[in-house]
Image (cartoon, rainbow over all chains, first blue to last red):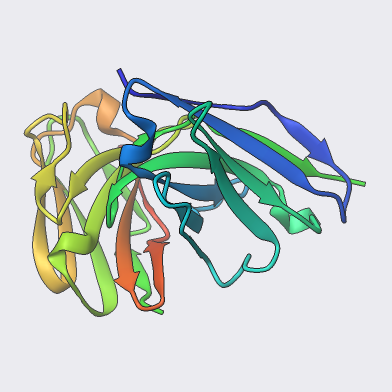
Length: 118
Length: 110
């Protein structure tokens, strides 16, 4: 069965960086890409970017472009999201999702809470 | 950038009733690029509908999606207690490539 397991809660200071991992299992890793979505407390869903697990091609949302980097490690079937220059409003739950086709995120990780606090 | 507007913001219904949730796009989108998700408190979203009207694996047939162009609808024919949650629509744009979500509709027990 397909599973996406994310790394644990992070607390960071403003200006720091965070790297969240998403380990996939139950399917061939390079078959599908990953999107990353975040959700600020009590708010809706915000797409951050996409990465092809096969080619490494990426697309980023304009709002976070320049601060976010998506990568994958095919040897460990793990996707990563790194966000730099953290601000208070980056506090959110960050999700990875398997992106099997445009607008079809069929499996999601459990979410990783990132808190930015001084 | 295409904006998705969901209505109503909150919908109060009783189990057994029919729920109709709306998602309106600021410009026409391909039906192949419209999805619906359900999210319960403390959980990740779950894919319900893709391609505007195709049910995802394991989704009960009381959930259905319809629409085209700028107007899309998620219908839950007879509400079960576990259906009370927040629902989001999502669309994909080719240029520039990316996704947007609606702001969500909260379906609550009346």
